[in-house]
Image (cartoon, rainbow, N blue to C red; front, top):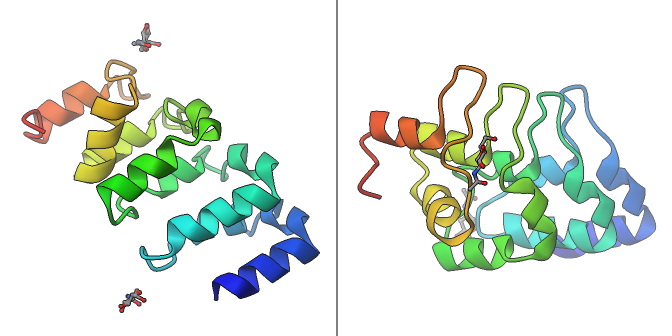
Length: 146
Ligand SMILES: *[C@@H]1O[C@H](CO)[C@@H](O)[C@H](O)[C@H]1NC(C)=O
Ligand SMILES: *[C@@H]1O[C@H](CO)[C@@H](O)[C@H](O)[C@H]1NC(C)=O
């Protein structure tokens, strides 16, 4: 499976930028692969097609938004987010004004919420289009003890 993706990317790295009818690229779809391989596949796509990091779907969601509830393991996720090219995505807001931290809070994704709150300085006060910040969502969700 992974080998096949490598071969495809070597042949045509530009396909990683192609969007389907929903604006999803192969990069975004990779987030929904089995959680044991999704981050590996995403890193491969980044290697072959670095410019795909910043591609967003039709709703302004980055790969980080799509990884909410799709990261299996805290240490693997932390390694993944430590890659410098992820820096620009940590506080990226989609068309609803939500960052990945808003979504991870809304969807009770403990791993993403923990990483973005404690390790990667996600902005806790940035408001979405409904005027809600990750910290207000955390309170609503009773996750403030995270
Ligand atoms: C995901 O991959 C693991 C390891 O290869 C496997 O054990 C598991 O059954 C897979 N899960 C799904 C939902 O396919
Ligand atoms: C978080 O976002 C708000 C609103 O854009 C900004 O005023 C504030 O400086 C940011 N905080 C940090 C720590 O970057």
